[in-house]
Image (cartoon, rainbow, N blue to C red; front, side, top):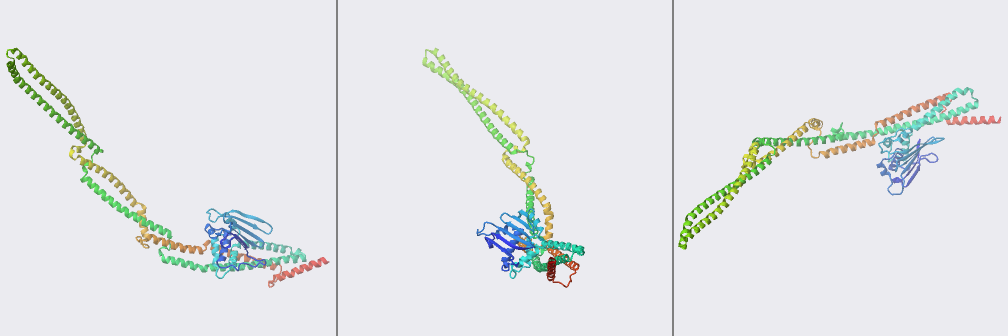
Length: 588
């Protein structure tokens, strides 16, 4: 089987459509006029139609001038009147595969086939029944190894591709030929004695026809074997270049000889990160320990008195201060009230003294004056004197009453104040029983401030102790306890962890390694596919041997001299004899 035609639409270099028949009417190959990168471009299109194009390749090959609304491709493969038509729509990834035999045709596959899909591709199962190698990348690498774009034409690529992808067809065709030839040979051996002369010649003619096919097929296999040997040789010649790429990489980065560069970068950066966290954590732990020691010293020396102080001391102290202020005010008021009472009592005594003096002095004076005035009417003197005395009594008696009433009222207030003072003193005493610091009223504000400081520092101490425990557990954990020493043993000798450009350096290592390995991967066939080529070669050789064995057996059975190698002449001669005999028979 070989590729005989290609039809594409919507490809960049061949837009809008391009069709090529790779054989003319006489069977000669066409394509010698296509060479260089154009040849490999068409070659990749053919493999893309068969095996599919990735999304990136579609962007690369799709025409961008808008000259075509479709993006499709079709190849036709043919071998001895058997054809395989593969048509792919790259827009939808729909593919159709039709097998056309000698007498009939049938669809082998119609559906979606996306090479970017991670799911299983059923079309590859269909292809594997026909093609020995179904890995497009490896197929292109095998052909590229034997193709020189400066010298070779597209025919060379077609020939290489036909050799590789059609071997299963050739195997099957050769096996069918061997089977048919074997059946004919068995029939000839069993029936030769019963055949007439004409039938014997006709059987011999058919055997010679098979001999010609066997020889032609064996010669084709010999040519394919030589081509496969050349392909393998060409590919192996390029292997040292790939080895040189590895040697260059290992020389530049000797520590990567047996190491995954991405793993190397990730582990070194992880080590660096662990170191930084460890240093910061250790420094924080030291600072925390220092602060805890300072707080403990503060508790011992400055704030020890507040250790047993009941919670809510600042509220109690505030209340105590308010009570104390109120007590001072009440006592002051009581003192002022008592002083006022004393003043009133003294005033009352003064009034009594004044009244007594007035009664003692004013009454006789009034009596004498009245006696002098009234003279003979002395009887009026007594009433006037008594009236004056009554007035004095009345005036001072009223004043005395008002003062006594005021004194009584003030004394009532004094009793109330005394009760309030006693209650305040009792409450203050109760508060001071559980809080001895309350007794030092002059320093109470200072105590409150210190107590608040004690509470804040106590809260800080708890947080510091929790953080200390967390950091100690962190530093005792596996990454810091085991991983850092492991990384030191593994990498300290090959890289300076403290270099400033370590991340850029590691990225350069990974990039260069990836570029080298990518170059190698792009030009290296996987071991499995290398085995496929050798297995293909082995099968070719085995079938060639079977073809020669069958060839020799048939020659021996039909008694043709091995030296008579020109089978076409023998076939022409015996065909002439058969025609002559048939003519003679008809004349008779």
